[in-house]
Amino acid sequence: MKVAVFSSKPYDREFLTAANDNLEQPQQLIFYEAQLNLHTCILAQGCTAVCCFVNDQLNAEVLGQLAQVGVKLVALRCAGFNQVDLAAAKTLNIKIARVAEYSPHAVAEHALGLILMLNRQLHRAYRRVHDNDYSLNGLLGFDLVKKTVGVIGTGKIGQTFARIMQGLGCEVIAYDPQPNHALAAAGITYVAPDDLWPAADIISLHCPLNNNTHHLINPVTIAAMKDGVMLINTGRGGLIDTRAVIAGLKAKKIGYLGLDVYEEEGNLFFEDQSNNLLQDDIFARLLTFPNVVITGHQAFFTREALTSIATITLDNIRYFEQQDFSQMTLVE
Ligand code: NAD
Image (cartoon, rainbow, N blue to C red; front, side):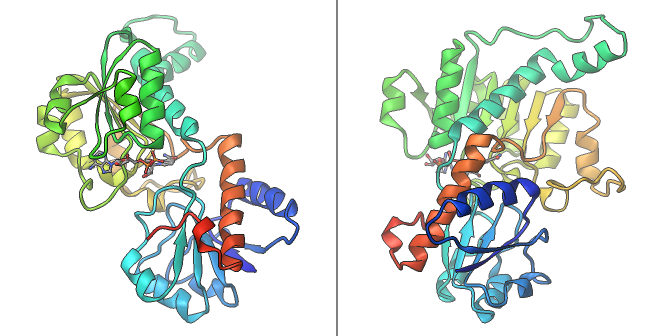
């Protein structure tokens, strides 16, 4: 099957090509660096499938154009699907498949990385030592043991993260509309959101972005949090009202902020922008805080995860070709 692979980077090509070469009947993968949007969907002409990532645009207009050029499958090479207009896809009879699980460890461990970096100020310490400055003023951290960690969403990533934090001796509390009984049996306490905000020293977001969770972190929920709370977002940018978080940082209500995702990351992340002027004033403001660490949507980026993403994506395409929909990880 002919597949147009959008937003493809060298590492996408490497892992997808390696997995494809292992197939008895390899797919015809056509790699495009371009992001999928209304201007680029014409590149999918003649392809039955498109393979997309987190910032490709899959709104009703783009899906309509894809349907017109003959696309019948969108194979997402990511877990989240908030970028897809599912109702439009259904109307157009375009199937949407995703990689529901690749490596929950990759994202959970990155969240831990952000916590350790912020707490022990490793980003500042690294710079100081390179500047021949070995002073410790301003680098004071806290022991993680016995601190309360609040986990929002205990699906595959959230539960992995919860267990890691439990292993470090933290008290872990969680909110999820569908609690995980095994996790509760392992000592993680499920609470209502209103009880989580004031109790947690560290809050980590692992729920999907949808209408219910958009701007979950807002002036009201921030006001309910502990003074000096550490907030970690490796979920999706839209979970956080960035302006409200900036106000929280300025007021010292939020003591630390670790982000791997950002509401307006679509025009920013995954590209070398070092020769461009940063046009996003809100993002620029975030960069001025010493207690904010931002990574460019890299939490998923491990060898194991990319191997798994490539294999599952190609499985989805192959099962679609065989019309064996029950084997696909479809989003419906
Ligand atoms: P998952 O579907 O296994 O788990 C999501 C959990 O969130 C479910 O248990 C669900 O019940 C819960 N949930 C739904 N609504 C909620 C709400 N309002 N409040 C609290 N919990 C709620 O998904 P996952 O594989 O654990 O991934 C979680 C999210 O992480 C994805 O949706 C994606 O946006 C994000 N993600 C980010 C990266 C990255 O590189 N930064 C990589 C993969 C996934």
